[in-house]
Image (cartoon, rainbow over all chains, first blue to last red; front, side):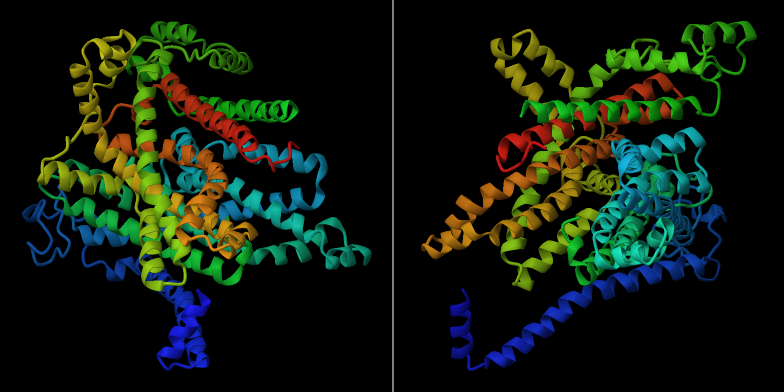
Length: 300
Length: 334
């Protein structure tokens, strides 16, 4: 294979040095393009959510009796059409980004905040503490994320805080497992032994040495979990268990639009597209970061 | 080997108990009295007290918990608050629908995901092939199954009128025909019934299968990448074997071993997917039953559905662990 490629390059009169440079350029492009696209999309979503009151053309709850179930552009002021109450779909989608992003970021933060210390403790201390923590994590891992979040939201009720907590709890065991496996590797390093030899206590070693060295990989994986959290929130709202209407969330816009798919498919199409693009953005960033920064995680 | 099997079973049991405990306590903190939910606000105090007693809710929580665990392992989840008949009967009727959906989506996912994963791994240095394939996989991973389902319904059911909008076909009839032997005595009717089930199954299986294919393709890609870097592949190439034979005879077979471990993960994701897929396509099944039960606050039914979901996932993971040890002799039975 290599020989034929080389022969080809000689036949074409391209020097090997030039080809290597071209390959390196295309390699760079392959590495940076997805992360660039992902970051632009994710930043756009953050801006959309943060500046919703400024960007949204109309109020998400304002009802226009003269424009009930109008298609995209049928009425000039409603670019993406309206729903059964004459509410502007574009404005609702822009405001819906707030819910998705809030839940996505806050639930991952929750999972990180609870899961990482427990995982590092398990990995560094070992013994009975490790067994207890890991068995609890395994128990929660028996439930897929959506199912566990669904149980918790059902039990506590569908509010923003409960949704964040439910998805956060469902994500926690993933962080526990990852932090533990990283801590298990890090604790064998010489610098940990040195820190201990210098009289560093258990807590100090974990906080000052194990955690900073595990942070890199943990942040990469956290980005991917933002995508999972956004998708889970949308699923809960779609099932009618998330934030109740009239507060717009992408899942509940889509769920409400289901009854009108025959006459007015734009309601479900645009809200679903918003979910997909948001999930795609964080998947792209997470994937690219993982490949770029931490080759150890490629198989995760 | 026996010791390994026993150890895996011993680990699975507390996990199952723990998961069931989570379900029990989550259902106990549900807002609202189940008796009020069942009998309505107008029910008299006496009637509510009778109901509480009948359901055993007057007993201490610990007693209720032990009772629930004991009954659950015997597949006795009590009676549905709304329908009145045993939850286990309802589950037994719904489970085949969900099983058929999971299996057919697995076929779709494998047919799409494995070839994409293999080609993407083998052509990883050809951006024109690898890139579009990875983008398809990423789209599948990012696309919510309920949205894809709705898009399929809009195109194929509403506009083209090729597939049905709701329902799951007469699966009960097919099972009945298989049980009483009618499948063999009147094969025409049986095939028609099977055809009807498949007709109703096509869109849900494609929707769920496509979103799962993304995961399968990624795992196949990494499994293939790992396998083709092995020495025996180099040996096969060195002895002059054609690339096709290297891929199909050596790499593909060995790639399937690590892929086996994902079946557990796959079943967990697919079962979760059925909750959404069955809701979108208004198909009977455990997932839709769970959502309906939660909506109706029929907690014995919801509890039963979640317990069966969890049991299935833990059991499949256990089987996969054991199977993995059988398939790959290099696994040490630690």
